[in-house]
Length: 81
Image (cartoon, rainbow, N blue to C red; front, side, top):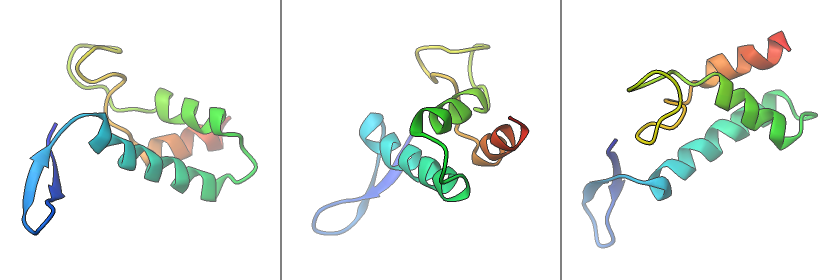
């Protein structure tokens, strides 16, 4: 995946890797934490883990991990628990 980010001094470039994914994961966790402030971080993590949209080979793999974060599905997962 390529995530567009700004460059020092102006302009933009596409980057990939965990340093680009981490802010998106953090934002997803914070959205869930606002909706479920009483839940510990581990439960929020599991909700994201089990609600990902699978990409690539079926199941967890080295290219996509568990897949694409799906915040609405994670929210519904927590509602259903």
